[in-house]
Image 1 (cartoon, rainbow, N blue to C red):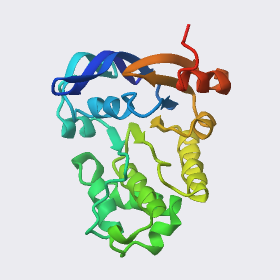
Image 2 (image 1 turned 180 degrees about the vertical axis):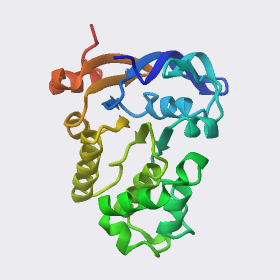
Image 3 (image 1 turned 120 degrees about the vertical axis):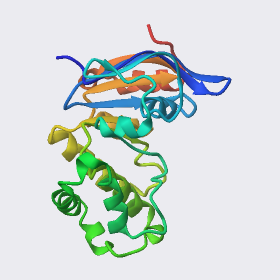
Length: 240
C-alpha cells in the first residue's frame, strides 16, 4: 500500500540550530503511527516541520506522493493535515463552541460543520455541558478534549497529535486513549507523539523511536518488545 504521508531524509531546526538529522518515516492511510522518544529527541520539531511551521533544510515531505516541502501552513491544513498541539493551545477567551467553530474555518470544512460538531459532541459529552463556557476556565482534561474536537472539526486526512496525555490525571488519560482508540477503529490516519509508551503501544500500528533528532528504531506495533524499547529509549542499549 502506498503511504499517505512520507518523510524522507528530513533535516530541520530553528535558525542555526539543526534538530532533525535525516529523519525518514512513512504513515499509511487508516493506521496509527506512534512516535516515542525522550525529551529533546525532535518529536515536536518533526510535527512542526510537517505542518510548515519551521523551515525544512533538507529532504522531503510528501502527501499522496506529491512534495509538500515549503508549503505554507494554511495550505497544509487545506490539504487535510491537521495538528493538535502539545499544551492544547485553545483560544482561552472564547467559548467552547466558538473554539470548535474555529476548527471549521477552512473553506473545505464549512459545509459539514453542523454534522462535524454533532460528531464531536457525541464523542465528548462533557463539551456539550461546557459549550457556552469560556474555554480558559476548563480543566486540563476538558481543554484537551476541546483541542481534539477542534482538530476533528477540520475533517483531517492525517491527524498529528502531540503529547495528548501530558499533565493529565490517570482517569482523564484513560478517556483520551479510549477516544484515540475509537478514532483508530474508525479508520482515521493518526500520527501520535506520546511519552506514555505502554498506553501508546496499545493503539499503535507502527512505532518509531527517536533520539537526538534521528529515528533509531522502526517496528510494527504488534512486534514491539516493550522492555527493549525502554532500553533504547533510555539509551541502555543501541539499535542494531
